[in-house]
Amino acid sequence: KDIPGTSTVSPGSSKQRAPDTESPSGTGEADYCRRILVRDAKGTIREIVLPKGLDLDRPKRTRTSFTAEQLYRLELEFQRCQYVVGRERTELARQLNLSETQVR
Image 1 (cartoon, one colour):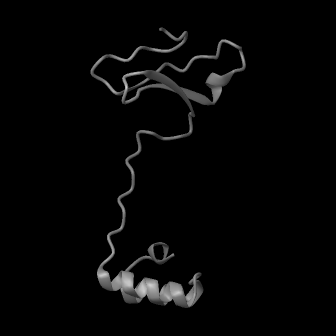
Image 2 (cartoon, rainbow, N blue to C red):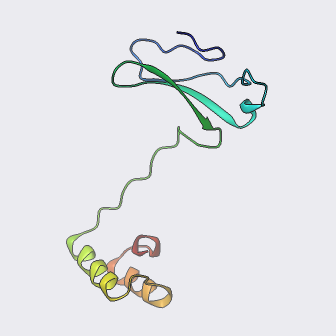
């Protein structure tokens, strides 16, 4: 069944962006929303409305792979004090060769 104001998904694709259109109710939804059509595991096509500010094309950041020693030290510090801040965080980051954000 076609949904007014959306595009169709070809059989080989799993996701396609639909055009940004104003909603039939005239609420101005197109000003801040983005519609995409997604085919689920059963083959059903569903429409999802997302904020336009959500950057779906941006690559995800890679997860930090900690060494066994880094994990051991971080877990020890966490057991001692769950919130490492200030000089302690700076020093621990320097010792483990990590950024302060990674230590956090």
